[in-house]
Image 1: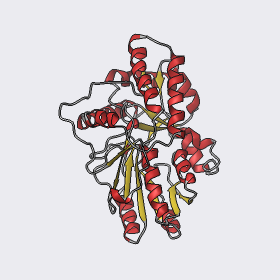
Image 2: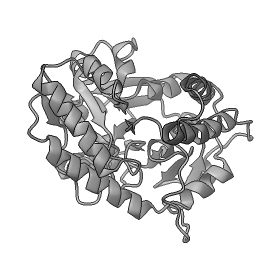
Image 3: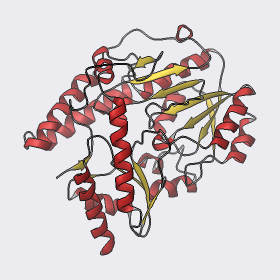
Image 4: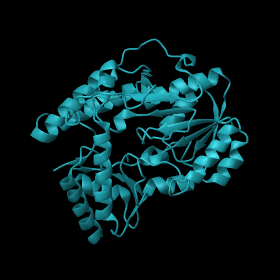
Length: 352
């Protein structure tokens, strides 16, 4: 049995009634492309000072650095809430506030009220839903997501509250070197996992080559075939399975010593990315290795925080990143696979 890892080609969730999951949105190549279009607009209109959450994927900073803007960080607490006092103090000298709906969970009513207050006083909000998919009550002036976090398809949807898309600058179409590679990878991965065909070496070659192109080619426009695949998926059913898996798995691990869920309950209508937990009394790296021996793949969000010179100097951020893991609860994961993971976790923690 295998659990987790990258998504493979799958038609299980195709619906006969396709529809865009977000109305009135631009479909672009992915989260990085969405943020690049937003930054292009903001820089042209002289927005140069950005306030960012301390806990974030360093690839976000890669995009901002490309536009040579100035940014500073507000504090994010261990439970991924925003330190509102710090946010308000630092917002004074900045024009744009960037916030993340971590792991598919939205911020509290009090936090959203503070963000709306700042917005009403002239601050622009960028709402990052790369881990949240399609939240129902966006407040950002710009909002975007990343579909490859939720299915075996590339692309991202970007919406604006106060501007029409005609104000945004889209470049000429560029050749997407990644797509042929990642499509082949997702096709071969299914054969490898279910039928034992092919080689792990070839799969890794395809995957890492595709990732290099995604990071360096800066393709902006979304692919029509990828968009069609996304809009033919049954997203209400996918969300329901993710929510069901989250609650089921949470109940299995809630009392495990050494494992503390970040979010001990689902929100009323969110679609979780995964089930994030803090690990104590045991090395995360060692736990990942032990589970990998049984074909269980877990994710760290984000391990590059340890080494990136722009983020590695915040002790709180490093401590969070060293102890957090994301357990899989996606639509590719069955209840028997969740049992398999929980059994292995129980065994590992019982003999530590």
